[in-house]
Image 1 (tube, helix red, strand yellow):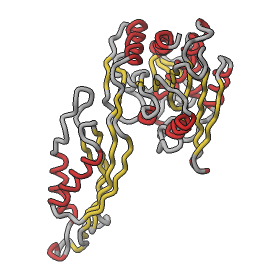
Image 2 (cartoon, helix red, strand yellow):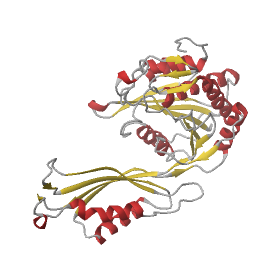
Image 3 (spheres, helix red, strand yellow):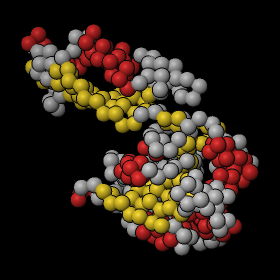
Image 4 (cartoon, rainbow, N blue to C red):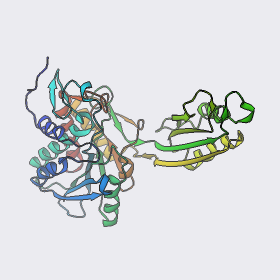
Length: 390
């Protein structure tokens, strides 16, 4: 059964409005201006921070409503991103990805799960909370960016640097990433592994395949080293993190001709690493393997993220309790998955967690969120506010 109509609820209506705004990275599509108007109506002071080069202009929003003790109030931050990934082939979608459609109990559209429904739920939760608590003890803030799905150079990281320079107090932060697996409330992310990428070029000697003695095939030379790296156990993780993993993501050699031995092999690989193996140690271990196999090579590293962990405490306890009260689900704390902007927030805020709807459809064709999760998601955020900010 397909329908564009559904029973209107506050979170659904706001999520629809946001999905209609085409905000493919780094274009905000007007999302933050639209949200800022809603937040100003609730007493927030809103500040836009634009950053980045002309061909990659990023919009960021910092919105703050002071608590009863002014600058001395503790601060709870709702953080997230208004940008979405590209749609891919439009003909593969069952409906226009930027025209939200409800069918079979689901809201479809690009960003429905990642993460415009979370943003809608956060705003609705704050509005409902403030309607009941006109002078909360804690300050409430929003930190939004249009550069989370992209290189993330001019988004949350820039705002965090600004807040650090100002001496802005941040006590708790909830990032609205889609964290759940099977149902709303089953997973909270209280940390993330680090990400370390290597670009390895193994140098050989190009030649004719009929005369291999006159060439050096870098694919043949590198294969034993790559096999050793793939078979290596880097660490066992710890009580909070799974073991470090190493994966090849891209590999290329050759000219396209069938009778030419390539002169170079390029391999791009990535570590998702736990605190048990610092990035510098992983780099040394890789170089040791390459040198032991006597490979002529060049190697460039990119550290995408350091691991971070928010140990169980005030924020996670409040969120776990809110989830249980709203949904009856007992949430699990987890550090699995990819990176997010929480890695930047963890440098300026000691308690950072991620929580949002199920993530099975994110970045896919026909991305969607189940309607039955929308108002409970707002309810979880509101109950967390009541536990920490009232």
